[in-house]
Figure: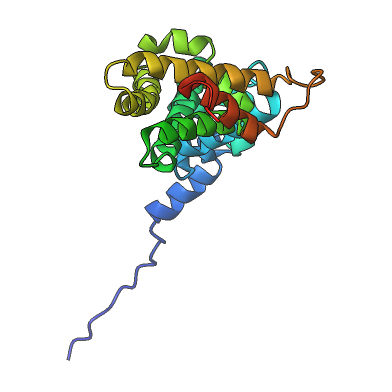
Length: 227
């Protein structure tokens, strides 16, 4: 019987593409600390929340894309994945401010009496401004005059005013638009005066801001009360 000679060839380990790729990526500059943040969950939302924080801390003159990226814990280049410029990001921050203002006014001003509803809107407007003064100044700053360049900001701002207009027209169908402008102007002006501390030190005793808002709104929007 003829014996069969078996030749055993030494097997060379086959390169594992996935492991090779992992090793390559691990040492690649493309995935260093500068680029990892691009895998950050909802990057746009995180950046806008960080911008709110920086804005409250630094104001409109101190906010930068780099500072927002640092606050969000991402690379300084990450914001450019969603915003072409600082103004583009600030317009998005202002847009969110108007959306929140509209939602708060629409949900909280629900009184059946139309006059009371207008007073509630004025109070809510002033309260929102005083709670977030830096955001309030941004919302009504120079970007608002350029809202045609930022369509979402334009829509949000006009939608917020729409809540005031609907309430004013419900109270006074004929003079509603004018009353809406009066309500907006009153609330906006009072907000700025309170934020700036303009009433501090006046030679007269003033009630708490919320009480003062309602008293002045009653007089401005409804006329002097009759005893």
